[in-house]
Image (tube, rainbow, N blue to C red; front, side):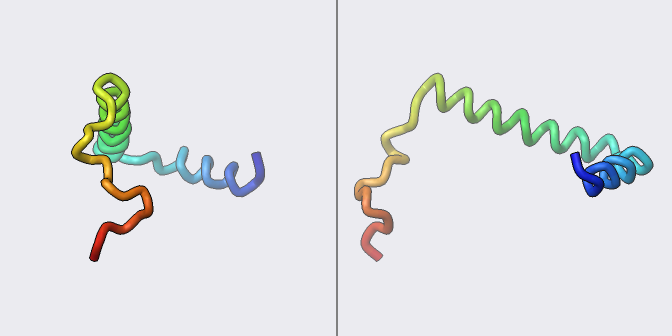
Length: 59
């Protein structure tokens, strides 16, 4: 751990984030984990699979 991370940790300890920001970040992480779990259980839907594996589709 270098000096820059130690200074950042010191500043974060002096002025911690608000409870609302912590709840927001935890909510975003929970949403990502939920989406990952749903994708692992039910798989990738066929309607989201592109027709062409080459990239952009006919513009």
